[in-house]
Image (tube, rainbow, N blue to C red; front, side, top):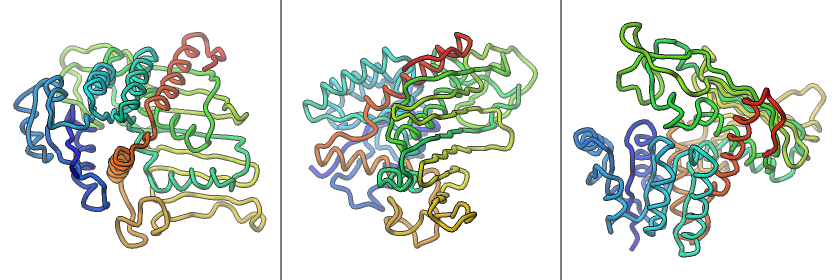
Length: 387
């Protein structure tokens, strides 16, 4: 009765991150339910078997439907491309399984709406769903949220959000599902832009209400072939090439419901930027800034300080900072993988307490509506588009 049995669909980049989280969470946090890595699903028996052995799963399935049917699976963790999210999540919720689904929630607003309806119906039966916007669980960003909620910044006036990577700058990097609109829904917009949209709305405490956007694709076709499923990789100039059907970069201005204005940029073509997920909020009394490439630091400026004092660096590794008291001594920073562990911890605790987790599917639907508005605006000469 003190165990929660996990079944996961997908075992590549996100599957590895989530596996690490389920394995690590009970070793550093006192959980009300201990996750058991019961079953891993993948299409190829050989590959999923090898992944299960490496990542620590007890058994495998080659059909996600069989995984959902299993009585020894309580929670389904979805780590596959977006075109499969709605079908798997809806089936799992209807079968009485809790669901953790990677972001973005779906490929379309219509799919996301169906997922929200399924999640709300399931919640009435005590079954919960959460979307995996893992950056919320970065201690420095959670601290930023606390500062904004405390009123330390005053009313928010400006929000600047960027997500900059460079892993697609080589035009001979081969095609991957992330460059196929049918599988991914969009390119940099949904892949990384969704993260900064969610983080900005969550920290500011206000939803976006309208956007004016620009999308562009720099490389129209890429080599076909190769097992290119994550970040990085190299290609070649020989052989057939296939079309890139998503955006390479997304930029938009926005307005928040509380009157703040925002500027957003997401690209996988910023040479030298490896995983620069950046946020800055300017309020009437103070400002804060964050860059994931220095993920243990939060920069804070208080207008009441001595003039010209500038931003001060908060090292978010103290025991009183979010999550950090369960890890290392003060000053020993955390890494990318810890946010997924915190995500697993928070979801398990919400389930055990019978409380709705966050970000809910409804919150993720709001992000999906922003993604759709950005695409609509960009297709209409950057016309202002309401959300």
